[in-house]
Length: 315
Image (cartoon, rainbow, N blue to C red; front, top):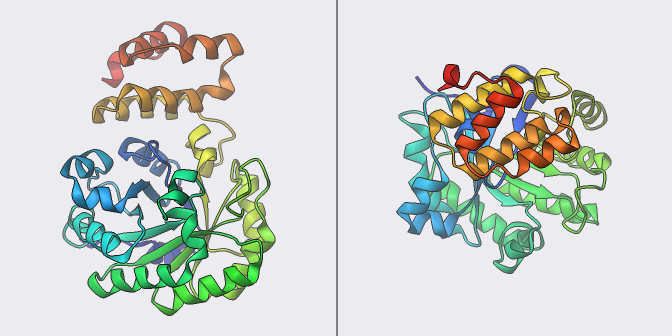
């Protein structure tokens, strides 16, 4: 059975909820978790295309999927079209199965210094011709939906030109993070800029930035009229955000423990996901105790003795 693309879901629902790509965190167990709580589309962590195409070890460790992971968008960072298309070509059979459309995202919105040094991520926001050529290379080799994720420019005329170039070579949708590459995440997202992109574009627009509650989601829709809203840190703290929960419900934590153990999640990721999810229900002293737990068995013992988690039921 052919799996749906993000465009299919937008057509069906009108507005969609999206889990953002997050380095280390948006792995398969977490993607499966947020799907249980009204998340329509999930992303992989950002993956370096040149490493992915060159290293079997990287492919095995960076990306895993299954039949329930649908639809999933794989996000690559790349500095040239060949690396991007090579990586996409390698990934697509494993993601699509027989009939899945792989949603390819060229990440132009990552402002980390290493990304700019490597001429990927936010560096590409000043290289519209390079991005256009990268998209053209992918579209020329693969019949898959292709999108870009961008940050807004200080001068929105540049953003307009960037979007129009991307549209001209076949980008199917665009995710817009409502901050410039120099702004911090503590600064509010520029909803006027996102609305400007939505009004200027001929493809669906997904809004990203500052989404921590359904009130934030509703405000973004009201002020921008976008086709979808993407959350990152908000979902880390509360994977049930899109289902209307104000904080992580206990059954969500139980579900994550069950899935993480089943998939063999390592201690670092397991520990950090639970730290985020339980932040609002822990006291300062409880956080200090939890933060120093140094192994998965130690975490499970703590959850059982201090929080009443029935670990045997989840194993």
